[in-house]
Length: 397
Figure 1 (cartoon, helix red, strand yellow):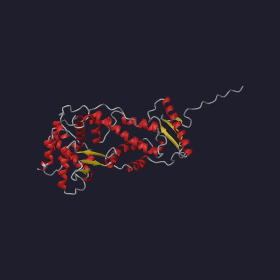
Figure 2 (cartoon, rainbow, N blue to C red):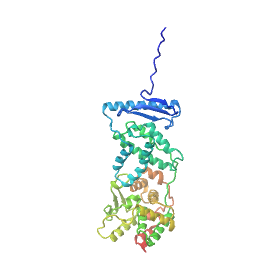
Figure 3 (cartoon, rainbow, N blue to C red):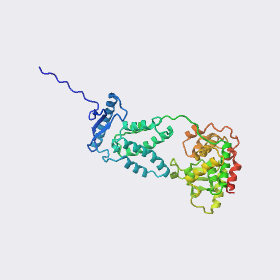
Figure 4 (cartoon, rainbow, N blue to C red):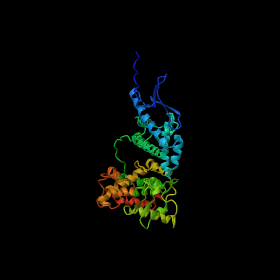
């Protein structure tokens, strides 16, 4: 009597073998649609500790490989394999702004190093589960000592890098959803923004005057403090401010799109801060006409930071940074009733170069003690006398 043969059930992860090696490790093996080489993935390293989890991963992998095989057959996917390091170098070469490029490099380099430590030699091998494993490692509590906001910035940088790679066919296993889920921001605890209240703003300006009065330190640090406070510019925008961007006669600074973080040109008017116009007019006369080059040739990012630290450590200034001054400007403009009126959130956001929701979320509702008749930033903070002393050059005496 012949026995009836039972048909083998089709596996959901056809084409992907799930194996347990002699040393106890669990791995998955498959053949790469690009090039035909055999590939192996360690499943324990991905945190797949159960048989069901491993088979679910293999089923998803099989679907990805099937989609990739179809794309290869249609000629819609690049067959060139690039290492993560090579792709990172090309990506960063296309980032024009030096500060942005340096910031992105830190995050992307750490991602590339993680891939190398995980055995990835080509971006074509980066799958959704592997990207999620990187995210889990990045966000693991206590893994790096970084704040959640910093880790989220790293994820944003890696997400931008992977989107760049996806457009060039370098990550065929990563669709838009896989990149989005693998770089999804973690929830951040709410925190209040840091800004200077009127007495603190006065103390910073007085400390800046004392700082510039000391021999052997870069001059005009006090004027830089005043510029940042009254304009709301970012430190990179202020340090590299060129006289060609300053129109004293029209009463405004015009920042080109290439020099702004949001890549949108914007104007900073002197109307809301008359002392700002007086400052730049005085500096232009001191530089000689026509003034050329940088407005603050004595300062760069490093010398500014050193001066700021000296103001706090030696001259009694409260803790502050260039971003604190920018936020103070935004807070005053958003809450001073006589400056922008009902359009305060929109107008202050336009001046500072960010979204109006930032002004509404972070600036609105602070500094309720602003004089109702104050029509400029100096009067709202009560620092007009100190600001004018800095313009007159008393910091140099």
